[in-house]
Amino acid sequence: MNHSNHNEVHINLAGEAGSQILLALPFILVLILYLCAVFISNRHHKKWPVARTVYWVFGVLSAILAVAGPIANRAHIDFNAHMLGHLLLGMLAPLLMVLAAPMTLMLRTLSVTSARRLTGVLRSWPSRMFTHPLVASFLNVGGLWLLYTTNLYALMHESNMLNYLVHVHVFIAGYLFTVSMIYIDPILHRISFLFRTIVLIIALAGHGILSKYLYTQPPAGIPFEQAKQGSMMMYYGGDIIDLILIFILCLQWFRATKPRREAAMG
Amino acid sequence: MSTTNNRSAYSSRNIWTGILFGLGLVGFIDEAVFHQLLHWHHFYDKSTTDIGLVSDGLFHAFSWFATIASSFLLADLHRKQAYRFKRWLAGVFLGGGAFQLYDGTIQHKLMGLHQIRYVENVYVYDIIWNFIAIVMIIIGITLIIRTRGRKQDGKPVAHESQ
Image (cartoon, rainbow over all chains, first blue to last red; front, top):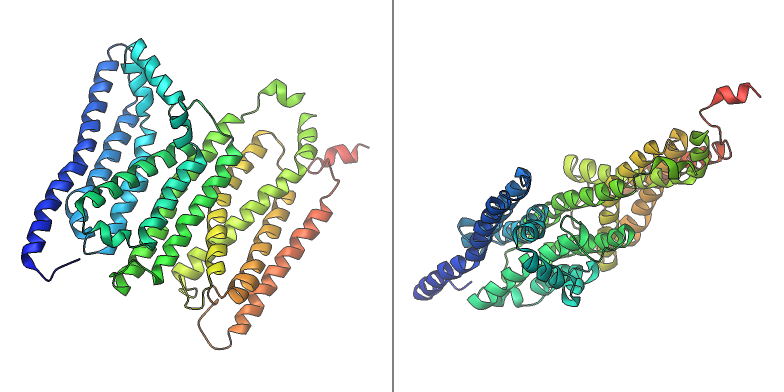
């Protein structure tokens, strides 16, 4: 937020370009890996659904759009752009990437031994813990409260390292949250629909309450008009993406509870 | 045979599905019509209390969820051949009315969330708002009582043959 000194701004921009590349790189990498895995596994298995590949491509693109390029550049001076980036990186990209079922793809691409090892990792207690709806929701929404209601937001714009960590956290927490709510990839410790529903509603409320709170109490240094716009962007943008999440959760319930003819009669 | 059994077995499920839908519907109308189209409601008001913000956030999230969930529950009732329109409609009135009354009294007034419209004599709006809510609740309860115990509702042929 320091524009008083021109040299400082230039130094920040140089560092900024570096950190943008650093943030975009993992996403470019997983895009290449995914496409390679589709190509390799299609030779041994039936064709991987095109829709999933499309989800992955668009998910990765929305993440890259958020961390590098015009939106990321504006995010430092414009709270609205920051929020748009946040919606793309923390909500839309994770949702699309979860829908692409990367673990399923990985399991069918790897050799049997490696696949077993991966299953072991998925079954381990840290994996169970971080994909539990309560833990994932706390990391996701709690992280946002921490970011916007403390001076972390201001510090983030002064330190490239902190900026990097916050972005990584926003994406990973968003991904874990999505994985904990809708089951696209194999998950080895399923949690009831009712429990997930309750946690999801509380998490959505936490997101909505924070959005409205920021309307009048934005992080330090944000002009009033930007705070209003950013706050509403967070509120309504969040609603739209949550709508898709709720729809998929309900659809999965609808399919899972499909009555079997005989059982329904008895 | 199974249709009749299901209708009585899922009698209260019809009401609950309706209540959720009513809640979601009123929440949606509130957002779409009063916030977005008319701009009567404000996104935020200086008078908004913290508890008002929390209550609004929870109800908004819940009604958002309820709209979608109740549609799937309705499809489920159809699938089980247990759908009873009047039972469901009773729930819609009851859920919608209850939410509207809560919104109009506790959220708007007690918690100072925002006013219905930013005009003089806002009490006229308040009275109409809450009056409609009470009428909806009464219609809902009346419908529930009138459809109670009629296990062969929608099957007049069976009645006549007795």
